[in-house]
Image (tube, rainbow, N blue to C red; front, side, top):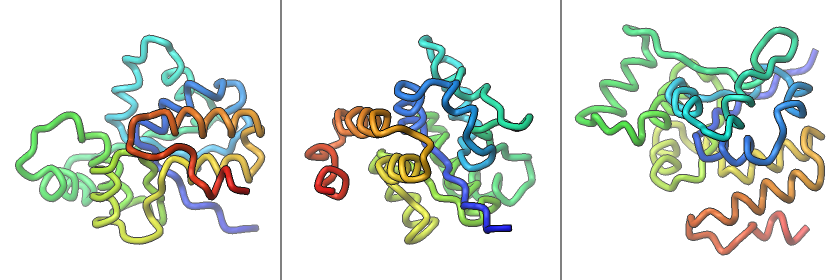
Length: 179
């Protein structure tokens, strides 16, 4: 029996790109528990008028959600990290999902890798989780492609959609296009 891969906990941006590119039926063959999102990301996804993100979140593999939702029971260590450390002095709802993801990865997410293309979220996660526990969205696409979960065409579309976001990047990174 091999070592199970560390979970990837997706910020809302990567979830939206994934949902807009890969059909829910494709995700049904993926293993449960490898992809996670914060509870606030699930709440935000429910308001997606296209239905793509909520559709992706309903997909199950062997009775388990392919994309799991992490929750924060009051009094838990993750809740303490979230409310007393990361959210201290902030009632900002905009960054709530990323703070939840980082708090979960700090406490319960053993080797979880936080996936984002938001600069502030990436910097916060890097400070809290350390090297090797934060990834850009392109890293997740590379993983999904290398593991055979997305086709060459889907991989290219995921990379293009990610590059088109106005994040100050010059485009798809050289490590992908220069292969």
